[in-house]
Amino acid sequence: MGTVIDFVSKYFLESLVVLGFGILSKIALKYFSNDRWEVIKENILIAMLWAEETFGLGQGQEKWNKAWQKIIELLEKKGITLTEKEITTVTDMMKANVPVINSISYSSVPEVVREIRNVPTRSPEITKLIEALRKKHSKPVIEKKNFKNL
Image (spheres, rainbow, N blue to C red):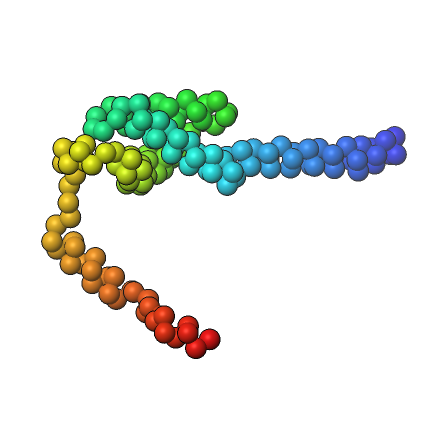
């Protein structure tokens, strides 16, 4: 009887611990892995570009809603569901990607359409601040004549 109890306690309980650790690590990888966030970031860009292409210039709120629905749809296909905290993070990531999407969209638009579309410009104060930062953090340019002696 003692031999059976020793065998069970030694091998069976160790296998339960290994199995439990395996299950916990699989769950942790599902929710906390970097690959998951890479997939989410990629799908944000895909959905936003899809909405931009589908709805064209303007219609910001409609594009935003359709892009959000597309993100949820794409993530569901990959088996990813967002938690409440992740939803706020994803919306912040969407807002951060708006300039990227706009630059892609507006660079491919003909000049006539760009002139019609009233794109907001920077205020003079912001322009001065940007120039001051550029001067402060600019790298020195190496002159071409220095390379001739090499």
